[in-house]
Length: 373
Image (cartoon, rainbow, N blue to C red):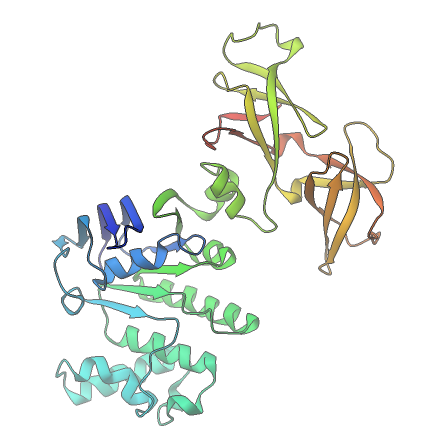
């Protein structure tokens, strides 16, 4: 196995579309890195650049210690698993699994042994004599995974391989991928638009937006300390709530306007929350709070509460996702216990956990070194 490094990579198409801009990213040897972002963010293009299916406009690509920027795909020793399985319909599962080794003129006995070993590890050893048309979607995906594993490449690249599967099968195959990664100790790069897949699969996650790398971190670091407002809104389901407002020096802080850092009060959208900052923040900010940190406390307003009207309720069994509208028209999402059951149109009181808020610069969107007091 080997590390993969992109160094200041640019990819600009003939029509001027920028798919990657000054992108530097290193995938460690044996790491499972997930590339995630909205449609058009450049994540699949970055994967194809690693594979050699797309030529870069500028920058360097290294696999291990080799500079592979100008090498064709077949000389990079990379295995790629696609969204559409890409199995040969006229071949059996056995022939599909061993095809990559066959074209490399490997000994027949070695191919057969390798195919049987990989098929057993994936639970498809009873399917070796079937053709793809006789397989379910999950079985076809396992064959596609097996064909890549049989080759024993330097790294594996996955381009949304589970998107054609139903919800339950996606979870099962995701668990299988995690197990395979642990057993193989392989370098893997996985592209998805599904943040749940990203959070549960990745050792680290790289978030892309319009071809620009936003943040690379572990799943928990991304959730707890997003680098900017985009990352904060993209990671987490339901998405983070945002409130525009301003910071003023808290009267009890004993500091005058503009005297640096310390205690501040956020005001906006009916919220008044004390925060402390490690450096002087801008006057205009955006406050972020995750739905799990908004408490639904009932119809009585109470201290520190926000009155809101329930617009939509999504019962999830163990909780209720509540979409509410504040008096000023702002939308807010909260997570409530399953009981009591809320009703559409009901007026409730919401309380924000001040110790769990995030503060972002209203202009740049960057996270500020502020925390709830």
